[in-house]
Length: 364
Image (tube, rainbow, N blue to C red; front, side):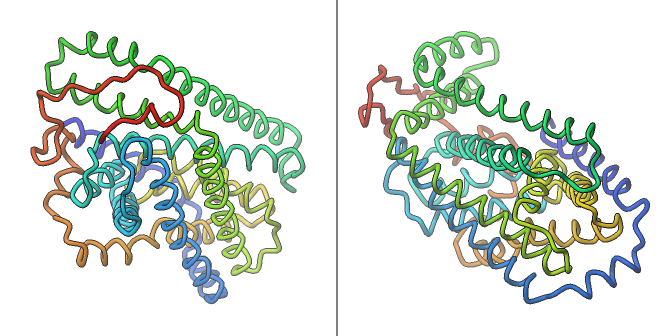
């Protein structure tokens, strides 16, 4: 019921934002703008977007190492495309598909892989905010007045503070993970054994996955893949802008990427449909792009960034031996309600004392 309510609220929010986006759009002019784009560059941008799924899969394997080493890269790639297909169809709720689909192919608990997905979000936020912050120091949108620039920079500083604070909080969680899980175990007793064990299992795996922050080599590897991932995303944006004849720099592409990231955080179906469009068009307008052209480009950018997963995800679903009924169930039910993938009610999370290096690892 709760999941359905979230989907309904997200859909209503998305419809409202799409209406706001389309309200002043000249559809005929937008169609002409899109038809006049360089389709070779748009094709190259689509291929670059598809390559990011491989980069994400490689990074995910590195994040899984502390809790479940030896996961096959091909399975991680296939599951990543399935996850982005779900995000494109139903929004951020579809993220839950990835841990469930992975557990059907590898001996990895859903709570463990979900914990690493949360880690991905942290690395993504820190990387993009860092890119965005550096660009704001040297880049001024042509049509933005001093007050607007100041507001954007303030927002960038706030995001950076949130990112740094998040890293500090994660370090503290890993250092005090035993006490944190014990506290949760006691605090959640009124909610029943299944809820308590599900939450403590997730937090335990998440805290153990944070051991990567204390491993300089692993941290460097994951950080490098994160930088490469978002550099490719910025180049993808640049290719799309060039396809529409815009003479923009890579810094401008990162500027719009930051706006798109904020929009993509809104949990609306269709890959943040509406929110992503409004935010991306807003960033382009500040760069001097005409409103109708900016909205036309935002439509194409959304289709490429989120829609590139559609053919790969469908192919994986058809050829990968995944159960559509199980994946569909995940979109509307809590993880613990699916018997095949739920944490057993008698499962006791394995808590280990703080040990530096490899000793902090948990068996999946």
